[in-house]
Image (cartoon, rainbow, N blue to C red; front, side):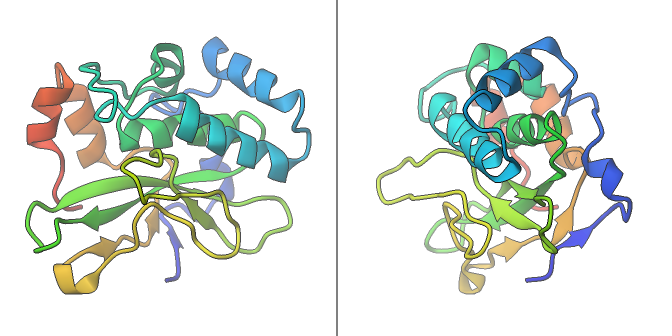
Length: 200
């Protein structure tokens, strides 16, 4: 699948925004800590991915009622759903000058019912000619094995067209408005679960 930049200017994928607030002291502190042992772009991007994937529980897996949507809040509170964790990972990448985009899939149950939009991050490391999608959601339930990879995608789930699942090709500099609206409107995760976007 060919990924498409919504903004042709690569600098848009380095910018700070309301959600991807990589200038925030909390984001900077985590980026600084990860940079100590990971000085090159590849090892830093991999370390940041593994940190968000493993050290910040997905709020559904942890049964955490809090809803986060700013990168700084995700990192400070240590919780978030896939959208929020993707925002946090994008912010950590941009904090070290690595272009990062937000992108999405639509996934469904095994019978094609209950579609939901799932959040990912695309990274473009120096010297690379293509974007590489990553899934920092967390390797739960058993059998999910998302890994950092620039060549072969190692996402949590591959889409199944026969179940009307979709890989959306567009790369966004900020969260898709539908996604951000759902996060911001939710007083808790139970409410959010009832209002998750089903398509973009």
